[in-house]
Length: 279
Image (tube, rainbow, N blue to C red; front, side, top):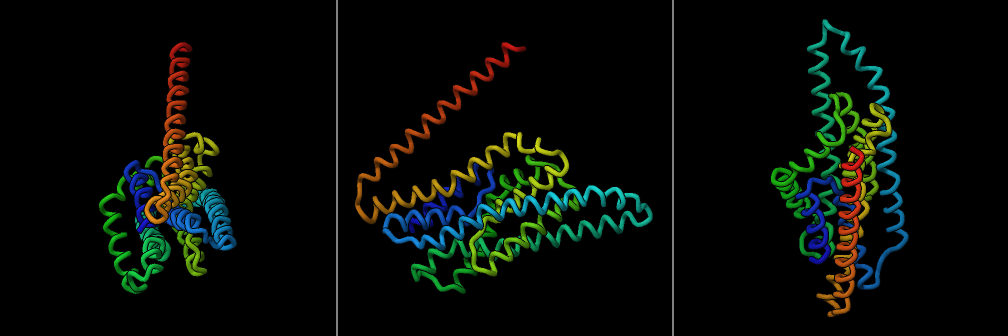
């Protein structure tokens, strides 16, 4: 229950602010927090998973970057096929829809298992029933709160053509599918978003990394598994171990976050004042 509470709270906040966040990283972070609190973590397995986390998004970005370069060469040639333009457009659109379904399929292989894993581990529900209920509530969550994250990935990072969207979906879906076959919880959100970055970089170069939304996404990616780890650790200390000293950890984190926020606000005001003076 504490693992799920920590992971759900972190994911819920990210969905509200429209930042794409990995269910895998948040859930594993919460599991590690509980493991640290009870003094039992499989260190070697954890390090291997984290290594995959660090590598896979950049592999997705590299593949998407190369596909983006190839697409820039192919698209003008396809647009010149005026006689078959309509059929070409319909075919490419159909390919994009199939790619999106393929990516959703690979997401189901990985993310439902992340959500249901703690319940199966605690013998609350069977594997078969857990997968059914998990898939049901994943679809409900997509319809209720998926819009803001969809808007971020679809509109606020870069513009994608039909072929570029297909490249993004095929890249991230294939990588996640391979990881799922090996039983690894991997961050599909990062793979998809970094694939979008890769395609965007193939068009506009490094300027894509200067966008405010990109900087915010990267910061939250780093902070989210750490925050869920810390939250689950503190909850176990408070609820299970009756260790009230964990409250000091919470207080220290809140104070640090508050000071960091104040520092950033001050720097932002100073920058705006300096910009006004220059004008």
